[in-house]
Every structure is written in structure tokens, then in C-alpha cells.
Amino acid sequence: MSKFIVSWKLLSFFYVLYTLLCSSFSSIFTITNNCPYTIWPGTLAGAGTPPLPTTGLQLDSGQSVKLASVPGWSGRIWARTGCTFDATGIGKCQTGDCGGRLECDGNGAAPPTSLFEITLGQGNDQDYYDVSMVDGYNLPLLVLPRGVYGSTICNATGCVTDINRGCPKELQVVGGNEGYQDNVVGCRSACEAFGSDQYCCSGQFANPTTCQPSYYSTIFKKACPRAYSYAFDDGTSTFTCKAYEYDIVFCPTNNKITKPNDAFPPPPPASTGLLYEKVQQDSSSSIILPFQVTIFLLVATIYVMIAKTWPPI
Figure 1 (tube, one colour):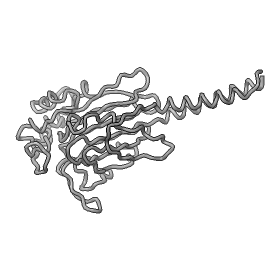
Figure 2 (cartoon, rainbow, N blue to C red; figure 1 turned 180 degrees about the vertical axis):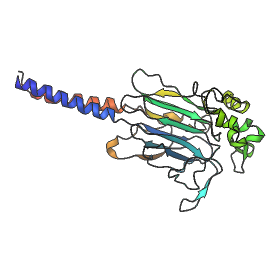
Figure 3 (cartoon, rainbow, N blue to C red; figure 1 turned 90 degrees about the vertical axis):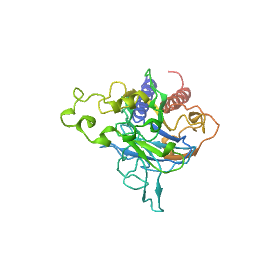
């Protein structure tokens, strides 16, 4: 009987250990530059959550980077274009600039900028995520959850249309860098362009009843039905999921790299301490085993091995 009690206590210990490991599960953001030119991704953590391993970096065409988060992390990820920085990381960008530095260090993106926004759930709570053009648009992007847990159906979202090509003249941001269609590098929101309460959903329009879609927000919504087009565009723009990894692909329809999602090596376990990894795309593919499943198999194997060493009761 004493051996049975020890066995039960050991099993309970492993179960508690497994539960704690699962509850501390965090997602990985894999940012890929599928554009035919260099971009400079930026990240901004929400209030009460720590910054990601980097708040700004350079990604050449074809490169991707993996950033590890923590449970409950919230914030924004975007890409800057047309940047020049000196050796100390001081400079400026044509779109998405964050205080004139390579590392954004708590500064948000200057509009117009296409934004990926997410709040990670803790434990078994769901993640909430969206792609927003409330602050305008500078690049197409696609967000793909991977390694989905439970019975949750996770949806891809984003804005894969090049809105710069059809941006109304009064909203255009014109630049001179090679690689940009017709030198239009961004499309401002009506709020940014005109500053009125009606377009900004402020003042007497600061609620979903009085702030309705405008002519300009409708242009964005028709081009990208799953993305936020104005402040109260929640119904068709916010998604929930529980995923191990989120692929964030800029210029997803560009033909330079045909399969951005098949080229990522498996993320390293958290125990290695590797939180920030940049890789060059290739033609390989990989299958990722969810971290919780790996832990469960390890715990189960250890328990079986110990149990086999004990004589029958």
C-alpha cells in the first residue's frame, strides 16, 4: 500500500508540473520579409507587459526573425520602409518611423502604418488579434496562426491588397525609394489626413452609434475585409485563437518567395534561452510539435520508466 501511495504522489507531482508548464506557455512571433526590398520591423508592448527581445531591427528581402513572447503579452508589430540609420541606430523612415531610432524603445509607429495587434491569453485563455488600418496603410501583411490547441478554429487575417496603388490622392504619402509603386509609399487614414472628429471617432462621434463607416474607410474595408478600417470596426476584424506561433508575413503575395511558411525551422525550447533568431529562407520544410505535447510525452515517459522499476504490490 505504501508503494501505491508513493506512486500516486509521484503521478500527482508530474501532473502539477505539467499543468504549471502549460499555464506558462507563450507564443512565438515569426516575422518574414517577403518584399523585394529591405524593411525594418518594429514592436511595441502594451501597458503592463515587457518588451519583446527586440523593439526594432532590419530584415533584408527573404529573411525572417523569431521573437519569443511571454504569457499575457499584448502589443503591436509593424514594418517600417525607406529607413536610413547611422552606426548608432539614429535615423528616420519614410513610413512607420518610431522616434527616429532603429530600436523603437517604447515608441509607437508614426502613421500611416499597417499594424498587427494581439493580446495573448494566459493559461487556457484565448488570444485576441487583429490587423488594423485605423492608422493608415503602408505594406500588405498576412497573419497566420500555427500550432493551434484544442478545438479552436483559428483564422488567418491581414490585408494582402496593395492599397497604395489605389489610394486616393488626398491620402497619399509619396516617397522616392526604389521598389515602391508609383512612389506612393503609404495611404493615410481620413483621420490622419483631415483630423475631424467624424473621421477620428472622437468628440461627439466617440461611440459606435455616431461613428459610422465613411467613404474613405469603406475603400480600406473593400480592399481588406478582415482588417480594421475605422475605430469601431470590431465585428468583422477581431479574431480569437490559441496558437503556438503566429506567422507575420509582409508582402505575402510577392513572387520572390513562394512558400514563406514552409521554410521556418522549429523554434528552440525556452530552456535554451534563445529568444531572438534571424534566419534566411530556403526550400526546406518542418513539422512543429507543440510544446505542451512534448512536455506531456516527457512526463509520461519518466513516469512509466519509474513505475517499471517498482515490484508489484
